[in-house]
Image (cartoon, rainbow, N blue to C red; front, side):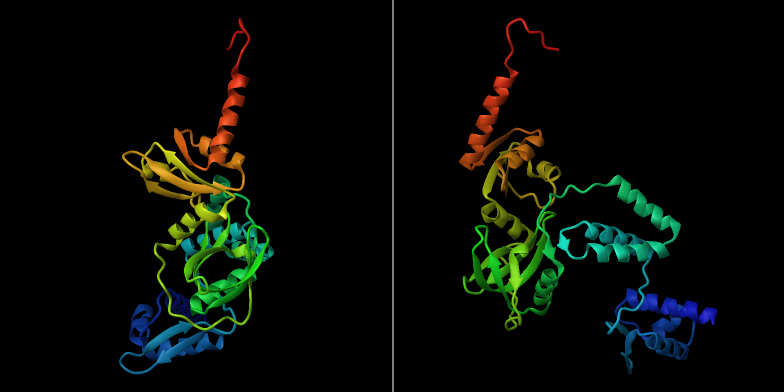
Length: 324
């Protein structure tokens, strides 16, 4: 019985690791007969796993989604990745899943060998989140959007703009993009006949979804398109900063999702970003410790000039004062 149970776990691990298996291939990997493989597959079905089988020379077995969530087998790397992801979700930007994530994490860590728990503890103690505090998004909203993307179904929703006004939209969803601060949806707006970027926390999906559609390709990669849009409309203050360093140097210094970089002559680049606060934007730019020039907006230039005058006044000393 112990040998059979161990073999069932091996069969399950093989089915999870590869989409399709022939009976002969499974039998060879397990060093058993194809009859034994058929018997093991029947036992897995009795335990709730849906294993689809086909006959013939091209036949075999495939593990399919079931009506309930059966136990999963994870290797060491997968288990650590899931644990780290659950811990991030417990304090992340998706509303309503914090407690669920903690419960799942507790179950996972309870069954982990000590060597894996130590690896997770090391990762937790050695890292800190640099993501800004952004608005949370209801998990049901993200799920509804993701399902519409997956099924290529038109999304119908109410959308609240920055000023608080609401409009009804019809869009063909392309991708959800997370910038470590907010969730965004990149979609083809049906009524405006153009690609648009929507903040997910401002979306209220309507049911049912609209008709299915043939997916369109955006003019550029989804993340780049969203980041470019952020610099144009998502922030109260959209900034264009010229940095006197190559793109490769600046890219290594900026956190993901902080804006869009593009070359601007030899040894220089333009950084398109923004913020709802001129003070926060100034703090971030000056914190890079690099020479820069503000191409836009004028409000940021005025803010920097005001700070420069303030700092200059603060640096003035009376005659004879000794500076150490």
